[in-house]
Picture 1 (cartoon, helix red, strand yellow):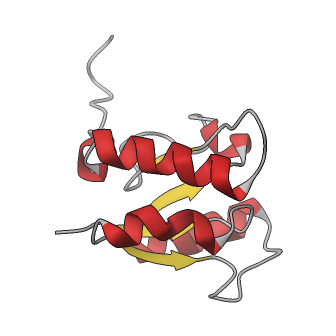
Picture 2: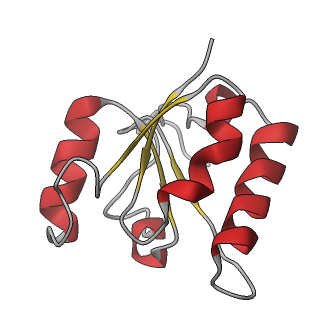
Length: 114
């Protein structure tokens, strides 16, 4: 069974093609009319929908703001060249090697020191 994925506005919907082939459900920020929202407002909507978030925006990598265990997961794609082909290749590589469900963070126990 596939995972529900939200594709950020900084990535073309063409990037999602490998996920669709693998049976994942993909909705984009652009298709939903959420383009241009500030990150905080966009994040509220993404979390409310419960989807795994795919973006190229490294700001979503701040674990102080987007703490693991408090959302279904974030995958940040960092390409050498910002192109549809490069991002699609990166996403396909991750999705081929890893079940997106295994990338979802395990809730952190705040009483346990690491």
